[in-house]
Amino acid sequence: MELYGKTVGIVGLGRIGSMVATRLKAFNMKVIAYDPYIADERFERFGAEKRERLEDLIREADIITVHTPRNEETMHMINEEMFKLAKPGVRVVNCARGGIIKETALIEGLKTGHIASAGLDVFEKEPADPENPLFKFKNTVVTPHLGADTFEAQKRWVKTLPSRL
Image 1 (cartoon, rainbow, N blue to C red):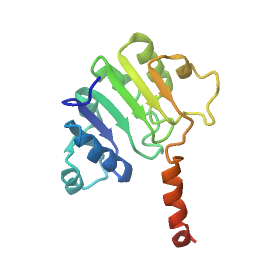
Image 2 (cartoon, rainbow, N blue to C red):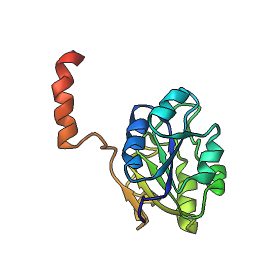
Image 3 (cartoon, rainbow, N blue to C red):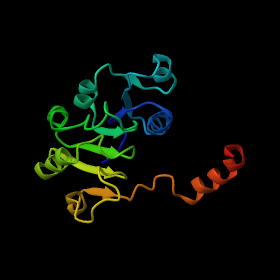
Image 4 (cartoon, one colour):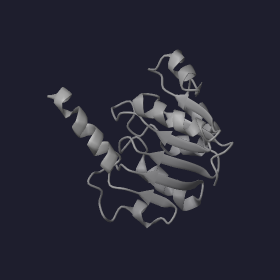
């Protein structure tokens, strides 16, 4: 699937979500975002159309990507009810925290084909159980919560270490 002309729904427009928005705008994607704690000017700055309700973002997005912290409010915020609202063939990415997307709902959506594919770097239980059903889907890419473990990211982190001490 090409990204050009598709709609990406970003859940959480903080530091990481805004970087995602910037990169995906370069692919001429329509960027929509939901984050009730972020000022409207931030949406404008990163070229994201604000959605007041998560349900509206879910209905409109071809790709849903999650970039929020996990807390009581966000735990399982994307669940069976949300996936029922999603377009058939939606693609889902979670590189934020496990549990924001309810895994049983994601698994069911992948089984039925309503969810076309998923990319996951986080799981409800970490380290992930080797028997996690998500590992069996050919249309799911999983990594072991290592988003910042590239050589370049580690090098940047080491450079900032003196200021962290």
